[in-house]
Length: 287
Image 1 (spheres, rainbow, N blue to C red):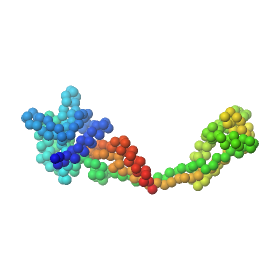
Image 2: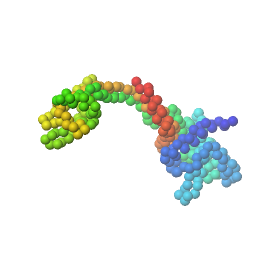
Image 3: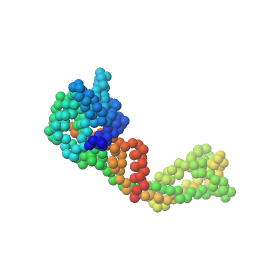
């Protein structure tokens, strides 16, 4: 039978692993070999149970254990729990770290801070239970979007000779060029279409029409064939839409580590595949 608090210990272990994978050195050391529910024999010969055991190397390359104590208490951690961790950490020569669901009693926090080897204290929670309001952070962002989209309703080329109508119907607009026969200057019709689209968006009209009249000496160049033309007409239809979307930290974040001393947050994100799934799901419910 699993001991009380095991689920929270497993959660904290996963948070530490994710922070490491993200390159977040929240303990100011490079954490290695993270494991849950380990046992270490101390200098006294006593075997100690460690909620989360990890290692790091000091500046001389010596491997130092990290002892992370996890408490899923409904109230603040008392001073005696800090004292117990300090005693165990001294026996096994470890860096002491405390993680708690709620927080710490003022005496416990002061004690942890002023030990010869201070104990790093953190609150660790899922996004739902983190201190958003107290830390003046936003958990959910409400976004209202007005998306301007124009669709091509019609595109007509008025040529001087009817025999060219059938020929042009088989050609895509991107393959058309306007050539000045006097200067041999060639301009892609695609540029005018792009400019016309911008003009349509700026107009905000339900239907936006624009025409490009041929100047003297101008012809259309289609597959190296010159086609005299009168004008090109284009019409855009406004398909703009409004959407409301909530972007929630709950969809992106796995766990949050709050540093009690500095107030800094270290955020362990959900895996990429999970994030993308949440984004797709949210998009299905846009109003």
